[in-house]
Structure formats: C-alpha cells, structure tokens
Length: 68
Image (tube, rainbow, N blue to C red; front, side, top):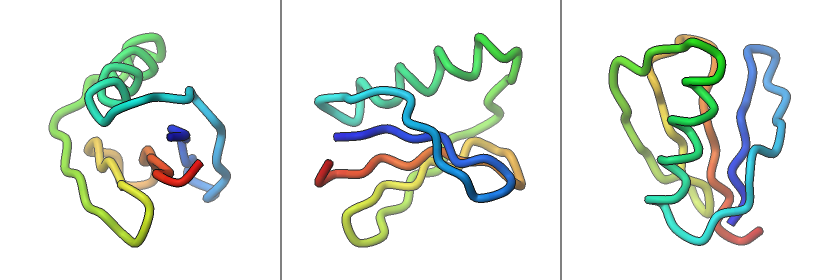
C-alpha cells in the first residue's frame, strides 16, 4: 500500500510504502512530528480503494492507496 500526503493544492507526495493501516498511522505521526504539527484528531474514511486520513487540517490530508 502506498501512503501519500496531499497538500493544500491537491498535489500528492509519496511518504512510504506500508503493509498495514497501523504502519500508515505510525508514518503519519512521524511525518507530522518532524514538521511540528500537532494532530488534534484522526478521522478515517474509505472511498473506493483509498483510505483518507483527516488529521485536523482544513487543507491537507493523507491518502492510503490500497491497490498500490
């Protein structure tokens, strides 16, 4: 599975290849910590073959592509 960060312009950047959603959550925490962003909450929604991780930002999110 491919974990991507989607910025406010809608551009995706690959963060990591992961084997599980737990590993994806850990990578999201690491990525956010390195950028001094405190995650106030996490909401996960599934759309087709993609998990969308809402981390409290109005413009940025993480996407977990299940088929990649």
